[in-house]
Image (cartoon, rainbow, N blue to C red; front, side, top):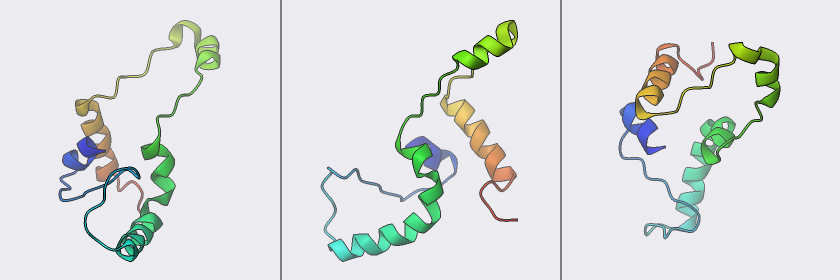
Length: 94
């Protein structure tokens, strides 16, 4: 998450895990913020909150020798992906 925000030039964002101590704000304050952010990020929650693992055995079986392993997600590769998404207005309605 932090690398993605840095690569996109977004700063000043603070996020907290549920078990972390919160800054001194009222519960209502956090509920309002969560509601605003939730509307925009809800569709991405499965992608950013857990590591997905997909079975690839069938793909390997079908492709045989044509199968190649996916690239490792490094900071450089993440930069390429995010730049492409940004350039192509990913997530924006047409």
